[in-house]
Amino acid sequence: MSAAKTESIPTIDHKPHLTFFRQSGWLMVANIVGGLMTLGVHPLNKEISDAEYSAFGVLLMVVACLPTMPLQMVFAQQSAQALARGRERQLAGMIRLAWVWTFIIWALGAFLVFWFRGTITKDWQLPNTTGLLVTLPLLLVSLWMPMFSGVLQGRQDFFWLGWSFIFGGVGRLVIAAFLVLALGAGAAGMMTGALCGVALSAIIGIWRTRDLWSKPAEPFDGKNLMRQMAPLLFGFGAFQFMFTSDTMFAKAYFSADAMKAYVAAGTLSRGLLWIVLPLAAVMFPKIVHAHAKSEKSNLFGIVVLGTAALGICGMLGLWLLGPWVVKIVYKTSDVAATMALIPWYAGAMIPLAMANVLVNDLLARSKFQAVPFLVLLAMFYGLTLTQFHASLIMVLQVLGVFNTLLFAICAWFAWRKKPLPKN
Image 1 (cartoon, one colour):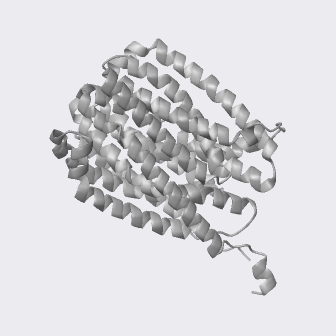
Image 2 (cartoon, helix red, strand yellow):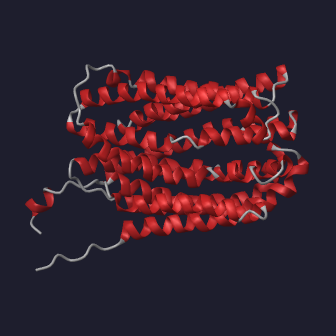
Image 3 (cartoon, one colour):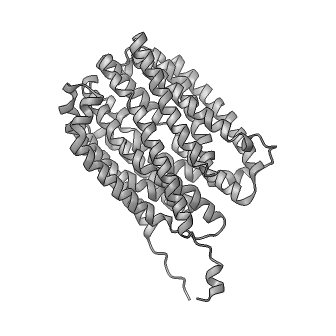
């Protein structure tokens, strides 16, 4: 290959790699600090009843099942593309339109939840309706936060994206601790802390991106936008469903006492992703930007190896140090039940973390062929959980099997060789 031809294919060199490691390292620190602040809310379970803590875990998973990941990745992709192609005014119109429609959709959903609040409280075995009502505004800010976090991610403003994680975690812990320790609030107090923390993260994102969403808007191709957005919404939505829905399914079949150990094991095991998610988060907009400008990027292999190494080390560390961590965060009496679940739960997170990297790479490069398979897998996963739940360990075995299938599907689409063109 000639020198001229080689120069026509821009490739990320060692300097951008240093930038990548610096940015992902900062996000890793921010994720860990923010995650520890969020985890710091859970020791408050020692001050409330098991029923209140179980209710907190379920309400938290309701929020976690919002399409926050798809929203963030859609806005990350659109922001990265708009900045690469000089279409900031079209991006401004899209952001403001999404802002209005998310409020309208939330208002309709909030009305239905408020109307059926008694039935929901009874079916979910909640101590009272207060925690459910606090969850409603939390759902709204949980829709707005990923929108503006996505814009920060897409413009590669990882410095303030990291600080939004940290301030959100601090706000959550401080408010929840005050309400529970000083005022004796239970699940409602802990959910109020979550509301304040997420709202603070959203405010930072809104403020830091005001130069983009406040621009005069230009018309954009709605049909083309939906063709780009739909695969991201369904693809990342399927991943998020696999990541979060097991707690709500389990809640329907097990008592509050049993669910406390399950929520504890899930909280600690999902903490493994605090370490590895920043790698994919930094990779995604860089690959979108490179794809939009027809540049070549070799970050994918680095992120795959880094995620595997960090995830496995984190899992082994949790297996070894789990009893000590559980004793600090929860009650001593919770150690045995929680540690019986953690090996299964933590093990199920490793293929999920690897699948996350592959999903990010596939969708960043607009390789959407895998999306229908991911959606079908998520649907079959939900159906399977309704049939196989003889024990909490069986629920986690189902989770582990389907996370492995998720990784296998993504790996096949990521690494399959294209057929050679016919002569």
